[in-house]
Amino acid sequence: MILIGIPIALAGWVVWRGSARPRGEGPQPVAQTPAAPAPAAPVRSDDETLLALFASAVGPATLHGEVTLYDDQKLFDYIDGAAPLYLQRHFRKLAATEMTTADGGELTCDVYDMRAPENAESIFAAERSSSAQAAPAWPEALLGKRSLVFRRGRYYAKLTAFDDKAEARLPAIGQALRERMR
Image 1 (spheres, helix red, strand yellow):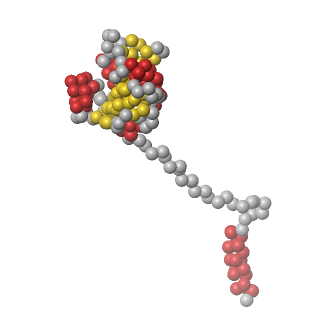
Image 2 (cartoon, rainbow, N blue to C red; image 1 turned 180 degrees about the horizontal axis):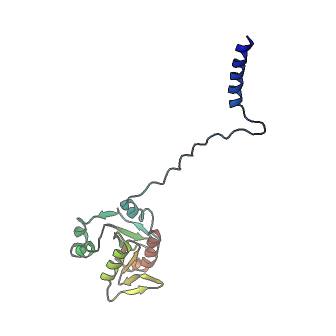
């Protein structure tokens, strides 16, 4: 009986000893599963980014109507003969809207997504009027009679005032729009 009990006791001790922690050691670390990554911010499409430029008042101007998007096929409906000039420079989409100022001025705001900064720079240079003047402290902008044009990144913007009230507000509206173009 002793001969049978020794192997059983020895086997029990081996099993117990293998599962026991050695003296002096603290609790064994529990394997950590990596935390799930935080959900990424939704990625905006290029159209959503373009429309977001008009999500609220633009400086001293508010939207007067909807923002209309024009693609390369519909661009001819909006600017007719000038469309090829834009298409040659890799035009992607135009967001156009009418705006009003608090004092009753009216203007149009056209923002062209030209896909890349060099394309926006190219259309800016191509449409430069000989009568346009550089905007003070803003080399990427030109002022004309009742107009302000500028470029920022991939965008080329044209603001056209219908009256003196809106014309006086063009620089402030342009600066506010420019700040939204990231």
